[in-house]
Image (cartoon, rainbow, N blue to C red; front, side, top):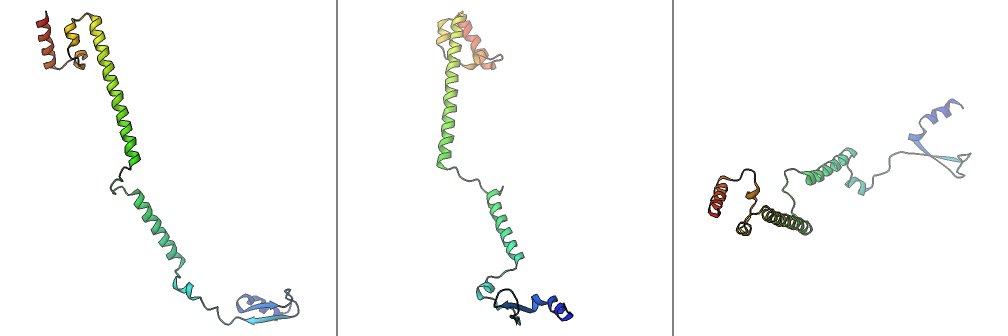
Length: 152
């Protein structure tokens, strides 16, 4: 290669565009000089923003979406119909279990008092959980003592 060819190779990309009729860049190579950059299309210039600005907008949009979802100061979201029915179902089951437990407790207490030999009048009286407490409430204790004195 001679020095003229080397000089043209150094800047060929920025100064010209090569075309060839046979596609091999053989003998019949035409060289077109690029005098100016292609004119930008009007669609591109109207909506053009630098990459930094585009990335900033996306980041701000994602941040605002995240804050909407995870804001600790936002009012709590309302309970929808399905959740409301589920909560009601749980509460009714809990109340049923408590009612059954209380009924079983009263039945066991009545059986205990009958087995202990308590008079029938006390068994028919309304029973409460105070009867089995280790330390009953003072007023309840006085009431029990007075009932016992009357029965004996």
